[in-house]
Image (cartoon, rainbow, N blue to C red; front, side):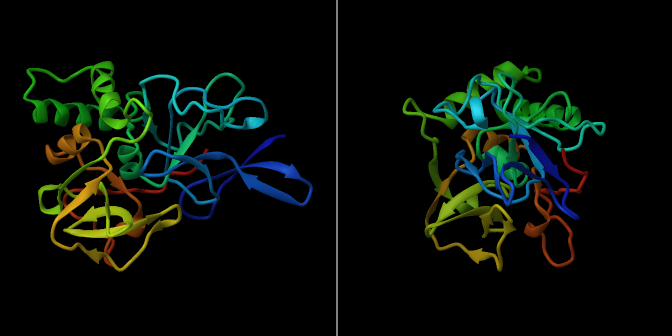
Length: 248
């Protein structure tokens, strides 16, 4: 089997692998806000990894991480084209946007997203009232305790929507989506649905880990897919709009 990278005309990337002369199927490397890794042809604007999760035939095993370093990276890095699943090395994971990656437990990469990493670490320092910015491994240790439990399930919690910052992922009324201006924008692999849904009074289930919610509340602005933006294309103050920058 040979990996083929398709560059779409507009947003994101579509990584597929040939399986027959007359058909193709997506690789199992798309990540949902709940942290699940599934196969879907939807386009994503960010990538990342958790170590090597695949084996022969590019199939994922039972493990969903190999280290506590869960990073979120840009798609286009100096024009390099990479195999999404090199044998024994790493498994490229793809996200709709940064808000999705953060909800799944990832953080900005310190290499290809140096400034975003520094901004994230500084907001972490502010949120925790630390004397200096934390190192990556210090944040990873805290994040790992807050993103999965001992049974390897995603850790969630409940809070009033009015107490949460824009840019976090929530579940309410059976729908999963992005919280913006007190409303839920339904999430999908293709983007955010509309119109935005007004939230009923009461608590919502928060998918984004507590430490990351605190980082966002302290000033870090997640990148969101353009489908989350209002008709004028202007991002609300608490988030940033993704700019398409190519694909692997």
